[in-house]
Image 1 (spheres, rainbow, N blue to C red):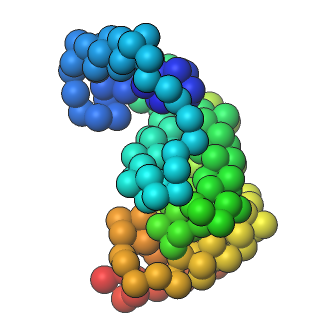
Image 2 (cartoon, one colour):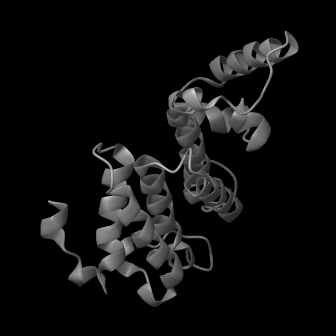
Image 3 (tube, rainbow, N blue to C red):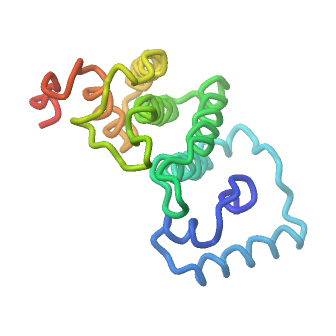
Length: 188
């Protein structure tokens, strides 16, 4: 429901994100809307419930980012506004004491590392440029630096998540001055 109502995804985009049939997603949306009409109240959860809801919030933010990073439909390969909104939402979470966890910092780092390459990822005629052919001078250095700050905060916990792993891989690419300088041993 958040992807549909808050993020503006179509049923088809949500279905692709969840690897489900559009009819299945449409039915889930109908049921969720019915629950809202029955009196389900949308409110900020109590402190004790935040941890339980974090995986769902982070998954929604990451799905929003992924749809922007590699659009599943339409004429544009990248939907920049989706990426920027996902990063904005994650920055809100990392700035709040209750939601500033290593996992949130890892997701923020991952999105920053990936989005820093936005100007170098697509040619002027909309064709994807592979990592090895990207002009690293076009990468957003400030965004990469922020990604490394978020990554250092992500490493303060004792739990390793998929966001940590993906951010770690992205950080190795972001640290390399060129494709040939990539520390492949670290990725192995």
